[in-house]
Image 1 (cartoon, one colour):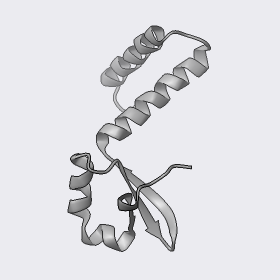
Image 2: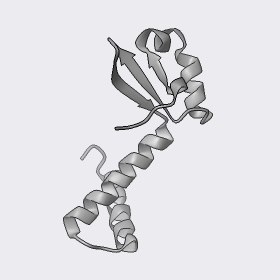
Image 3: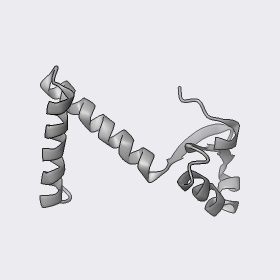
Image 4: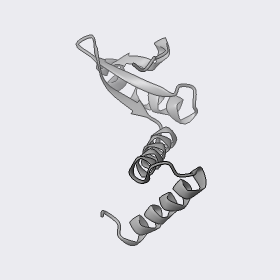
Length: 93
């Protein structure tokens, strides 16, 4: 389970009323994430684009390692770079 600081948890209503302020806090790294509460349950999380890209990159690296077995960080990085280049050549694939 992910832990949230008190200032990272907001109701959907609070988020709508203060959207710009919350986004600015994410961009300025005053907070790491925003947990959105609806009906007393966390329903969604908002991340900065930097954090999202880091998570996706880490997941892709792990996926490459899982697929090919035990490979070095250098090999995983080279494979990741190759995948990235393919995506630039064939966007949406």
